[in-house]
Image (cartoon, rainbow, N blue to C red; front, top):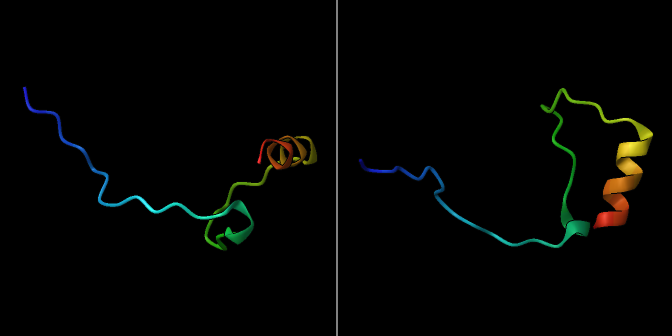
Length: 40
């Protein structure tokens, strides 16, 4: 059996350089946003 990998590239960026994607329909509550901010 052959396992296929769909990863075509990897790029490391600083968390501060990330920007919201306007096409992302998911909305996270305040509690989730605070937890993520603390993790980063």
